[in-house]
Amino acid sequence: IPNSGRKLVRLDYRQEWDADFRQYLQQLDSSKPVILCGDLNVSHLEIDLANPKSNAKTAGFTKEEREGFGKLLDCGFVDTFRHFYPDKTGAYSFWTYMSNARAKNIGWRLDYFVTSKRFIPKVADSVIRSEIEGSDHCPLELLLQI
Image (cartoon, rainbow, N blue to C red; front, top):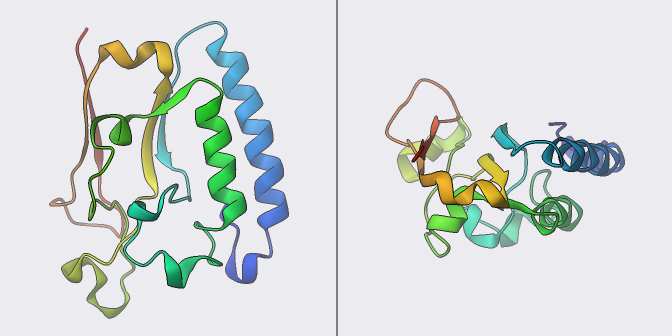
């Protein structure tokens, strides 16, 4: 998923991409349930990053990017982590390598499992594996009951 870039130079492109990708996912969802996983380069809610106020105009937390993700959810998709943990704070999947951010848990939740709403009954849990190191992102795990 495109990053809006420093100084938000690619924000317009990101918004176009979000609309096109949303349309693609809706089309795919019309024929089968969708599971989307990956770095979506957006923290949707204030509780999805450690410092929301100081990052309001930072790529990944702009009003436009957050609204774009909200539109995806409004089209019949579910952020599985927030489905199970709607109020959980301090749950991040990305930490910059600078300033020892991971050790201080100053992070962002940029990585997601998003599914079709009709698939949610088959989802048992959505887990952020923050204890696993090796990258500036950590793995996610989607547990299914099939």
